[in-house]
Length: 624
Picture 1 (cartoon, rainbow, N blue to C red):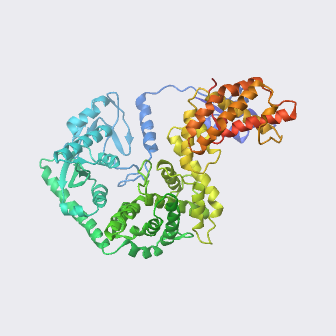
Picture 2: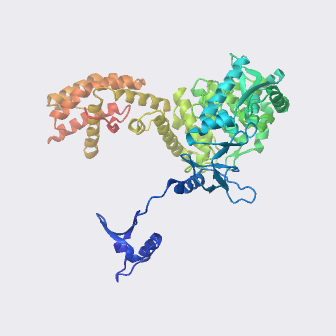
Picture 3: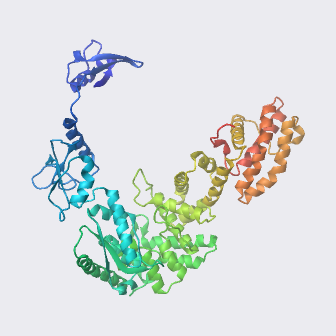
């Protein structure tokens, strides 16, 4: 064992007496100051301590290693049982601890190590001897009716559930999170199917599915058209001699829960979304930003504005904005919060609202998570954008920007949702203009305009993460975003164009040339003419570059103005040879001031063509 202590100059005072640092280091090593060594390093002389410790048998070391590992497990809440002081997530009844074929004698979590394990508490609760660690899983399975490996157990459950569903003529919808939860609840899984009264299918299917999944841990079934079937599959932790008894018991348990869902649905049918809207006045969105009713007022106005820009119906968007939170006041959503949006759609249909408005009641929450689908209707797109932009603008305006891991208003998710809708739909809208429009919806007590720039920058930061998740390099993203474009759909086109440009033979040379141009222009303080004077050309290389810029310029600008960035950059890639020749043969900073400024104007013209898409001087390209 070797340890390095404090530097010698810090270990002793001017009289040579040991300091507290030296005394503390010696004490931690369990020796006197005189027993410490000194070592020389490039950074000076240090106190050190070394001691040779003989090795120990593994059986002596393993208990402490295991105890440390158990203590380090990320268990949020540990518990004690009875009079024991041991803390763990569950009571520990026995401990199997082996090294090879030998017992490792120890006591962990108040359990004494032995060479036995125990199997399923119903099928095989007696002690089962284990001869070696390699035999553990097979012995426990064959003799104990316990499948120890989680992945093996999970795939067995998946197969059993799928086979049982096929036997019933349907398909099991296997939610991976539910599958993992069920896998953790059983040791010897046995899939058993049950059924319920088809009359319950009149209730919104999402509510029935939530009841089956959330409360009972059942897998639901659908037919070949994706329609819910009046069946379910549960996974028992026992191999029953009479599975019908288990099925009947589960059917008996699920019936009142489904009846509750039907009751909520019927009660909510006695009112309408419009009638529920006034009750939103009593629900606080945020203390400084008002109630949910106030929020719907702002969202409705902003949705109208957005709808007018995307050829949607502004009047329909306004009404959708007014009603989009009303379903939060239904009995169904109170019982099943996950039904928000879904219930709004069903209720709007029942109320006789426009079908597109009904879809928008659910689409306002899309996308709910990463990879989720986006709003499909124009009204839904306008509404989803308006709702998120209102939240972002308002929360930033009152100074509650997310910090660290704290994001109580889910602003990161809201910003990503806005970006995905604008880019992937796509909608060619100006994000900065939308934020200004959102800011104008707040009353005079909230100065949201002053935070527009901060919200915009925050959203662009999410855009960087969005593209990095898609495997796009940081320098490509930076090359586009440094120009501060404000249309996310346009940004996406530019990034795709730069990606394609980087694959062209002349890309590396042109990126390097643009970097050189950028450096030249940064260092000069001369007044550069806005136009290039061809009469001042004296070198063939500058004449050729000027001529090709004249030939390409108008066509490339037209392509860029039409959003055809990839095609325009491909045309500019033809400039590789004349640009290389220019820098090889032309002295930019000529002695003649007029010639010098003219050459700087030529380079500025070249640079500005590329800057209509991206600053390619920021690309990290390999030399060619």
